Length: 634
Image (cartoon, rainbow, N blue to C red; front, top):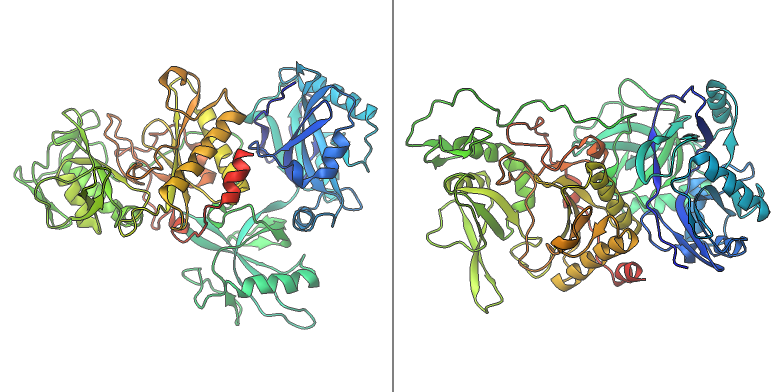
């Protein structure tokens, strides 16, 4: 019997426990989500993206192999349990690094299939009864390697009070009448007892008195690409942790503060750090000035990228972003310019009133001015890279064409590099280096800018991998959001941080920076393996081949952009489409508010950030490894 992985159901963050009686409440555990597939004594333990982690938890697999069922699919969480049966994330990390160091438990809270019968459409109350019966027959107790999740009872207010008094992390609420639905929906919620999230380590103070190694750790979160100071934490660090942590910190020391400007009240003698480590910290609340109250160190998070660390805020229901009109605005009157030309960034724009986007009412001059405004944000991602261009000399209503090689005379503001092609000849590719060059592209009828995933000095060594999530028209947008989150989680489990942007068209782009050590063949093989893994795990949702006949109802994970000479649209580039969509980098925390791939448009942009939202991407160093590829193909 073949059992298939199911994308997990996820909980939304809420600030209160529902009062009506249609809910059941469980302890919120702090561990690693795992789905157990058991058939004829064979066990597979899969992460939330379908990676096989059975080898990491052999004792759990051995216990599950004895379950009295021909086949079963279970959903739960692996935790490191302490003496009071509360989970401890730091101890779980220790177990993964030093197997056998702590006691593990697999806490099961749902059952998706039993003896060949699918149960996902059954209400939770029915699934829970079947699960309780199964584990009771298996003699699972609170001290067992595998046990049932703890159900909480009582009035909602008292229930939450009791959970917090027991120093639990929080409570999970689930609708008793709801089926099991993959993704983040309204049927599962989470309410936390205290604040708890990840922070970037940006510095530390020397110890005082009898304390050894470190006095306190300075914490920060990213906001629009800038690190914001969040306070200090000293509690929760044992002497053993202090010594080991000091060794890690001294390796990433730097002379200058990553906080600019340095906030007031910073103690003397601070030793600053490169913002490359992430810690999980619990706390009671945020102060009015954005600092933590009563913080306690919980452990380092090696599965979290620093650039993904933002202040978590309660957002009960995803809402469409409310955008303030900036950048290019829809107009009732054109600016007064000469019909023969206007100057932008020192570049003369001829035919400035020509409508590039007739439906949106956006002129050539406005497009040029937009590129001048976003130059400081776009250039770090396109400068000195070979470019392919979509040119629409008469606007998008006229003929548009894709141009890889520049022909004819090159304007003085542009540069070109000769790159060897498959025909054995070197062809000139445009490169840009400043705002004037970007504006020149607009003058020459360029609408879309597509950089290579490699820089011009070493075109055969890519430094970026782009996954284009391209949904069929009948795929709901919520599925595209879940797909992006799933891809991000898979990459993180493989040891990679990734960044997100809208495509300006139908979908989303997930971008993975890599060091320039692997060639295009390796990058392409890795991208293909990722896409094929996701398509194999969830074949009803994902497609890894460009087959129009099979696209209906699915998302094509376009990995083909990661071959030599292939390109992807640049961050902040407009698209040659009637809606005038723009490909905009966004923080992962903003994804729930994104409602379409072209949500951001030239005449409907949010205020431009002062700093690049992808600044951390530029400094990230992560190499493709044969081990990562092997894990995907296992």
